[in-house]
Image (cartoon, rainbow, N blue to C red):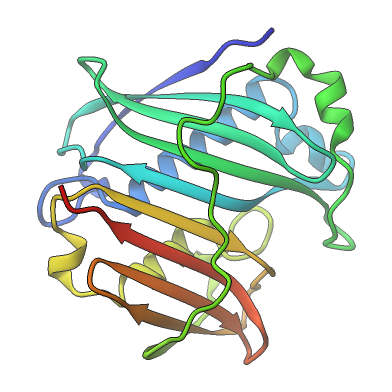
Length: 244
């Protein structure tokens, strides 16, 4: 039986906005870095998969942040895998401050792809060979919600450049989040209210594509849809702030 793994972080100056609190994107980056570190340490990281021409890709993610930590604050991310399926694996996270108080949590679902065909492959073998990595603890939050339809009232375009792409040669998750959040007003982004982000990846976006980012803004939430080169949706997301 596996155990949760713990990783230490600090909110550095590059992680904060002008309120001197960590941005949602920087916390998301720490969460995904934790996933990579833990998979690497347990023997099923991208280094091992790449040798078989495979890689991990994020399919869906939900992040809940109760309060954004301040600059130079130390925090701990705990991570564990709660299940493996044939298509998706569920990896979970909690974020706690130095006093042990939880201030965030996340649930991610991962697929494995063939790097040549860019199609999903059966990942059941990972669950069989690494069953000791599974921890029988349920996700700390509701699993990522599907966003089925978005009616944008505003749109902007973004050309995918070198700094947007990651080791899988498609657009980095945090760049998608930054593109979307950049469309929102500052007072909404900087309010001190609990926030939940759900993001669902439908297709890859690659270097050189022109992306259309659409936003449907509501009173305390926003829906987003990103498409590439005028095609169908590649990414859908929702950000929702909860009133106390």
